[in-house]
Length: 254
Image 1 (cartoon, rainbow, N blue to C red):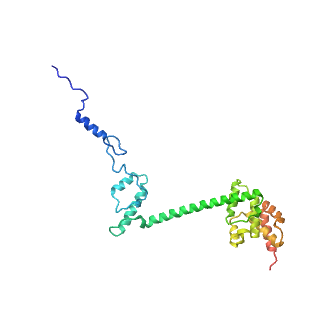
Image 2: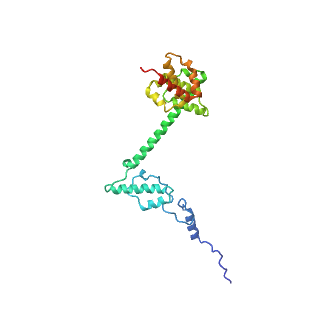
Image 3: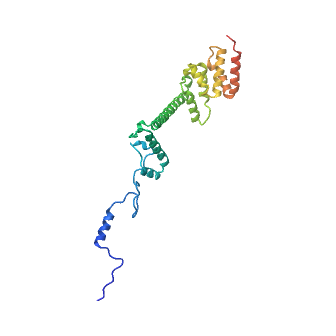
C-alpha cells in the first residue's frame, strides 16, 4: 500500500496551537508592532520640561536616552545637566528640592509677576471700557459738561476715539480742555495736570492753555463765552498754542 504524502503546509500540532493562542492572548507593550521588541521606556509618559518637579539624586543615563526621543529634549536635558552640576556642588547625600532651587524660584516668581500684570491690564481695560460707556451715555443726554474728569480719563478719550473709527471726538476734547484749564476734577492736583501733558494730544493741550490765559485775562468770564477758543483750537491748534504763549508773555509781572 502506498504511503500518502504529508500535507503542505504542515498542520499545526495541538502544542503549537496552544503556544500560539498563549502568545495571541498576551498584551503587547503600547506602541509596538507585531513581532518587534518594545523599546526601553517607549510607553512611559512624556516628562515635563522641568525635571525638578520630582525628587532626584542623580539622573541615570537611561533618562538621558529617553529625553533624546522627546521633542523637548534640548531644554529638559539642559535642566538635568544644571541639576547634576547643582548636586555635584552640594554636600554628599543632598536630595534635590525644587523649593530651594533659586532658578526654579525665580522662574515661578517671574511667572507670578507676569500673571499679575496681565490681570492688572485686564482690570484696567475693563475699567476704561465701563468709563467710556458712562461718558458716551452722558454725551447722548447732553450732560457731559457737568461731569468731572477722573484719573485715567485720558485713556478713556483714546478708547472713545477708537470706537469712533479714529475720528476726533471734539466734544470730549473740549470737555477735557475746559477741565484742565479750570482745574476741575482730578486736575486740581498739579501732578495730574503735569501728567496730562504727556497723555493728551497737542490740540487739547493748546485749547486748555488758551482757555487758561483767557480766563486770567478776563477773570470771572463764563467759559461758555469762549466758544471761539474751541473753534480756533479745533481748526488751528498750532495758532491756538501760539496765541496762548503770546498772552502768557504779555501777562503783567506781579
